[in-house]
Length: 225
Image (cartoon, rainbow, N blue to C red; front, side, top):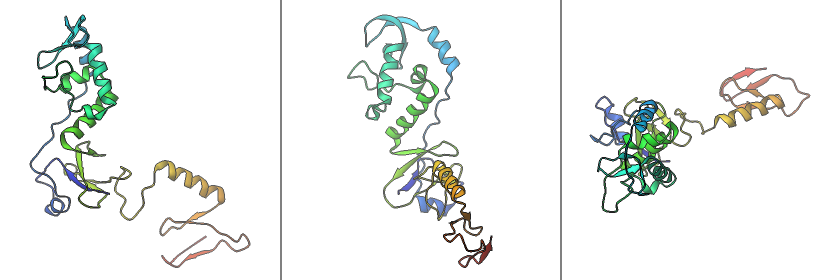
């Protein structure tokens, strides 16, 4: 369990939440570049021919912001390797040791599909801002810190809460149960003929088949059949 620190700051966040979750201010993460597959395909079709700095072949190349040129296949292979090794983030120019220029997302997305680009954004955010995850509601990135034992994540943008452990909406007072577990438990309950208490939703099984079906649950003062 972790204390959650949001990398975004919003003046509309209540003061007691700012104190409880210790929001960082006023640092802001840039919005992720919109993934545009059709535009990427069109740009890749009209690439200029040049010498790739990796394979040294004369191919259609993508000219990076540092003016180094990389062919489509080499850049795709380089980024694909990085997606399997988060230590390569943030992704730098692949050809020269002395070039520390970061490869911009507008070039990265031209060699990736939508799922891969989403993975790239996650790894890139972690490398720039620290360990964290996107908010399950609004997708803004939230940074984690191990300064205290709190599993409740408070997003300063949408101001909604979710559980860090199961990454589901916040469930105060209940353990994390996956949807798959819920389906299996419900199937088991129906198979054995067990009932749910209308007061607390606990599963109740009758262990003596000869007794009546009348149940009194004294904890919540509920009676049901």
